[in-house]
Image (cartoon, rainbow, N blue to C red; front, top):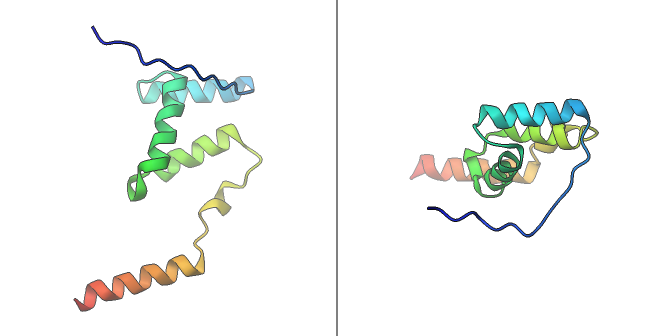
Amino acid sequence: MAMAIERPNSFHLMLSDDELKLLRLLAEQEGLNASDYLRSMMRRAAGGGQQVNLSRIRELVHLLAPEIDVATLWVPRPEVEKAKTKKSKKRKSA
């Protein structure tokens, strides 16, 4: 028999009824409960690199902090774009 993971920490969110319904719906689509869904989203965001599903992260941000303009979170920065271009040119010339 598998032992349950001990989670001594607790974090409480204040959600509207609509937000809670949405959280439960998103979790249900993944076959998870709300807590497991939020934990999985955090793990994906922290370690997923290019594999992170940005639409799911946007949904989560909108759910937890609707006052944040999600569109501005993924605006490319010029220095990042320059680094990507340099890497791409190196690969093509190699």
